[in-house]
Image (cartoon, rainbow, N blue to C red):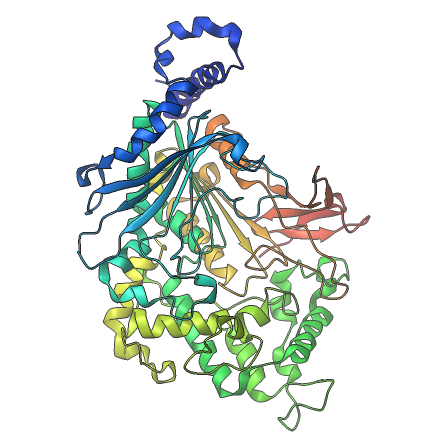
Length: 577
């Protein structure tokens, strides 16, 4: 009997032919109207039906988790003439999903229905503590400059605020206050994404008169965690998932934030000159390990053993006059501690008992050590009203301790002892940590998973994703994993997906169209290459690439073999653990 993917491919070809015909691109194929798929609505019919969705309610019985009903608050046809050239004509849906707890906030979602649909859906993930509506009309994580948006390619796209709102999230300091409500926190953990997906699929069936053929989840950071959460909790809901720098060991990560925050308050803060000295020390120790001295640390494996922060400690334990050439004991302790595991005195979800430390390699790079670990000025409690003045780790760690664990908004993170809150820590881990290595149901369903870790990530440790991938291999065997999953490493790249040389400031390539690779694997059975091409494109049309680099399949890194350092052919994937 043909497998599901083969049958879906046949259905997809027939579907695409009819949709192209409805778009006026296959006028010679009118005979297709006699086939069963000819019941698809025409573009004219879709235009007329868009506004009628505003009167739609999705009952709670159609949602696969305890929930209130969903209500469409706005349905409007967005015509091409009224939008940027990159957007097609589509029906824009805004709606809300009511909570079970009457005092919990509702879930807001946006669903975008293109009039020419390719039969596929992409659910966008969020970021940080979420709290703002993901419109799903933006480029996907790490997409190259000029790459067509998913909706432009014919995908239905949708996203959610995860069940709470943070007014002006970029300027907020109390980003986790919503966690005081149990349902709001559960929605953030996993439930809102499933609820939004179920509601979206009901509306898709009503609009197009048929179900999607393929469904994907694509996200980075918190959104990457969400994607892996869906694979683990709802393995038959998605055909493919792209998970970029996922914060899957969330509970351990945020305890690491708290530990680093205490070190900062105890004298560990470093100014720009000291961070530059740190970065240049890493370059001195590690730069040539990848075959090229260019200020870009590709061989992160070897760098961990090669660089020793203790060598930067001042002999008299005080920083010298400018320019700095050594660090205080407290500053060195911060660096060393950040590179060490955070060990729990009890097991978390899936019996994990620690969180790995961070790697070296992007200290003196925008979006690296200064952005996440130290911040632009010494931290304070309470947190500075301007969040741009505070390291992101410090801000998140403080919110985590006060709102998620102790649930005491006035708690001082310096007084935190994990043993005092063991039950709550385990409860949070069971909700938030996407660490179940048994992906057998997702793989048996035909699901494909692509994980990308950025080795210069100072937000979450890339070792967390690497260790998770190894756990999946141990659980299911290398053959099963090779058939269904890939882990790629973007070296010398920050959490935000950017990177540059620490010696000359040269911007390095970090972008790749992961959705296309995933779609080709799911639909066509085209297994992704062991090395993908990262590019850096010009920001103006026609967006031609001016630099390229390899993104190697774990555990390899790009090693220089000679030639133009800006061209991927000058490197080969080599080494590893």
